[in-house]
Image (cartoon, rainbow, N blue to C red; front, top):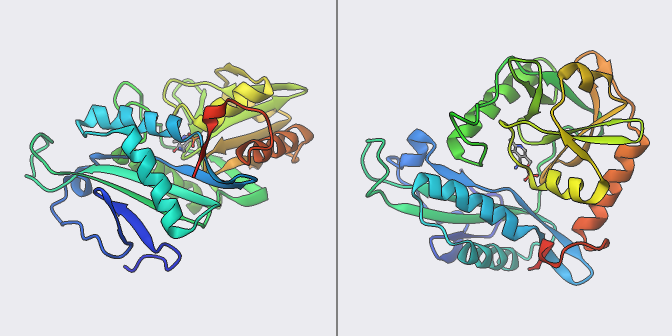
Length: 291
Ligand code: PMP
């Protein structure tokens, strides 16, 4: 399949190449077993040019996944690759996808002795969730338990998200909400969950959920309380929104039969986040990396 024309160049194993250039072998270990780790990062146009939001934090999370899989990964080298790929494509507002994976070797599960690869692609197309009318369905699938698969961006772990997304879409929903055996909210397939009740903002906490960087950003900037939350409490909240690098702050219109209005608190937080990522709010200097 040809790469999108908007993606002219990709980073592949130490250099920029034409996007449709790299060929990956059919015996690639990651293709068979999901032995890879990726990130979803975003760059935004700011007054001082393009800037990547919380690049170092994304690459640190990626390093943790790479370490688990025995993949050599240097966050500084990866940061340089991200910036160079953005520049090569002339992308300012962009979604950035780095991936490190185990390549060809044997069909054995032991990754030792296999080739390792690293790529970065950038795309100007944002990955949307469900827009302003995002409907959540409670998934019949359980989230990968952290004790079986740590909540990092390991490729194979996303089969769990794919199954839940397929089921949600088949039922006419935009996104799936994972709930655990005890009725506690975990997260969505690619976003963390927040609830607003009165003027209290709660960032839903769960051991099986990915520690989202957007969630962390909002907790640090809008005074949210982090704690576990039952599905019943979420249903009763005044406002619900989900957040992630791609989703940004997405208001939830419905959770199964329960409908929510797009409330004032969600609107305010969405606007705050939009200003933050564009460098229009004060924040730790390390959060915006010039590209
Ligand atoms: N949960 C899952 C399962 C995700 O894939 C993502 C997207 N990375 C998130 C939450 C949100 O994380 P972040 O804010 O770091 O993008």
